[in-house]
Image (cartoon, rainbow, N blue to C red; front, side):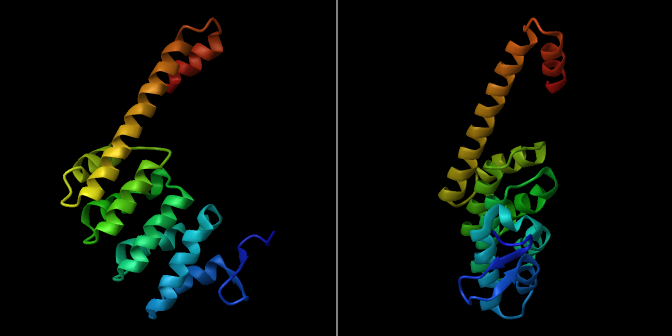
Length: 173
């Protein structure tokens, strides 16, 4: 294993850390930004500390090859309630279908869906691009299925003979 924050780059053989990659995301050179986005995408959860820089690049980078890789990197890292707003914005407003559908995919795989996320996915179902619509619909179907399962599990738990199980189930509702 590599020390925290340090990774071996397969491209150059030099040790590259997440901070270097996030700095590359802000480079004036398109090839550096694209390489940084691809490397962070490949790293997935190991690149968690790069999330603020990835969110900035998702909203601000003018290059499609950077933005779609950034959206996919965020999906692979995993969204949290604190970082879904930028992904929602990209899903609705990015001019590229490749970014919009990857943003919908990232939201589908998120562990938490706020009202903002659900409404944005509903809006994305009317996107001009069929692929974006398909990913948004898939996300809504999965959210619905998970919520139904959670409700059924909580309902069963509310009838449990254990007071602790009933109390936790009631709090979860």
